[in-house]
Amino acid sequence: MFQKAGPVFGKYQNKRISLGDFKLDLPIPGTENRKTRILFFATGGTISAKGTSDFTYDPGAVGARQMIGAARKPRNTRIEPHDVFRIDSKSIEPKHWLVLQRQVISALDAIEKGDAIVIAHGTDTMEMTAAFLHFTVPGEKLEGKKIVFVGSMKPSDSATPDGEKNLRDALRLAKSKTFSGIVAMMNGKIFSPPYFRKGHTVDVDAFKRINGLEIGKLKNGKVIIRNQPVAASWTANIDMLADHPQDAMLPNVPVIHVQSNATVAEMKNRIANEIRPSAATRSAGNDFSHSDDEQRMPSRPAGAIVVAGTGNGTMHDDIEQYLAKVGIPVVRASKVGDGEVVRNGAAKDDALGPRQDDREARNFVCAGKLMPETAALLVQLAMVDAESRGIPLTADRLRERFAEYQSPEFRPPASAA
Image (cartoon, rainbow, N blue to C red; front, side, top):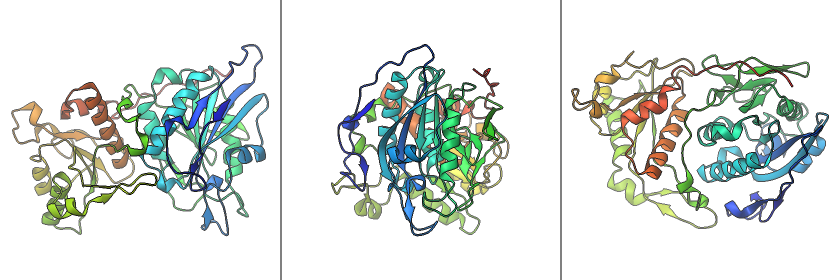
C-alpha cells in the first residue's frame, strides 16, 4: 500500500510540499483470479466538499477513505484510498502537478496491467491537470493501465449531489478492460485530455469534448468505449524540476487574448510588457510565494507567446506584423472553443518573421486543435524539455510538438476482457 510518511497537503495540514511525503510499500498481487487494483488519489475539490449550499462549501472536508467508504464499489476490485492534497482546484499550481505526477508514475510502476488509478479532482482545473499528465507521463507506463479523473459540480452534502454517481461511474470505468490511457469521467461521459474542457459554471453536465473527440460513455452501468484515449507521441522530460517541487516555476508563456475593444496600440503595449517587463513591473514583482515562506519574484520575460485569436486564430494585421518581429515563438490559437486553427489558413504562418527568406526566423506556430491555455502548457513543457537536453527551442521544434495535435489519431477500443 501507499503509506503516508509525512503531512497530507492542504489547509488542514502543513502546506510544505515534498516528494518524500509518500513512500511506496506495494505488494505484488497474484496473477490468477486476482481483483482489479484501483489506487484512489484524492486531491480535494468540490467532490470532497461539505457546505451550506451548492455554491458555498469547504473543499477537502471529506478525505479519500471516507469517499471510498461511501461509494458503491464494483465487484472483484481492491480499492486503496490515499489523500494527496486537500485543496480547492482553483489553487492548483505547477508544484502540485509535479507532486501528483511523481505519485502517478510511482503507482503505475507498482500496479499491473488491468489495474488503474482514479484521481478525484476539482472541476475548475481538471482539464489542465489531466493535460499535464498527458504531456509528462511516458506512454509505455500506461500500457494496459489507466488513469481516470473524476469530480463533481456539487458538494457531497448537497440535496442533489452528483459526486456519488460520478465516482461510482469512474470506478466502473477503472475496472474496464476495453481501454488504456488517461481519461476523465463526468456525468456519464468519457473525455480524453487534452480535448475536453469545463464549459458551464454550474450545470452538472458541465464538461464538453472539443473537436468532436468522443471516447465513450456509461449507459445503464455499462461502459461503452468508441475510441481509445489520445496517446501522446512525445513526453516532456521534466526531471530538472523534480528536486524542488515547492519552488517549481514553469517558463513564462502568457496567453494574450485579442480584444476588439482594445486599440492596436494597447495590444502592442500589452505584448511588449510580457516580452520585456517594464522597470515598474520588475520592481513591483509578482508574488510567487510557496509554502510558509514569503518570496517575491521579479516578472520574467516571456519565452514564447500564445495568442488567443478570433475565429481561426486571427488578429489585426498590424498586431500580426508586430508579433512577426518579436524574436520569440508566437503560437496562434483560437478562443472560439472548438475547431482547428489551420496552418497557413487565416494567417500565412510560414511567411511570418523578421526575414521571410530565413526559415529559422519564421516564428509563427499553429496550435492546431489545442485550446489556448493547453497550447501554452505544451510550450512551457517543451521549453523545460529542451533546456534539460541542452538544446534551443526553435519555432521549428515547436511545430513538431504541435504537429500531432493537428489531426489526432483515433484508435479502436480493445476487446473486452
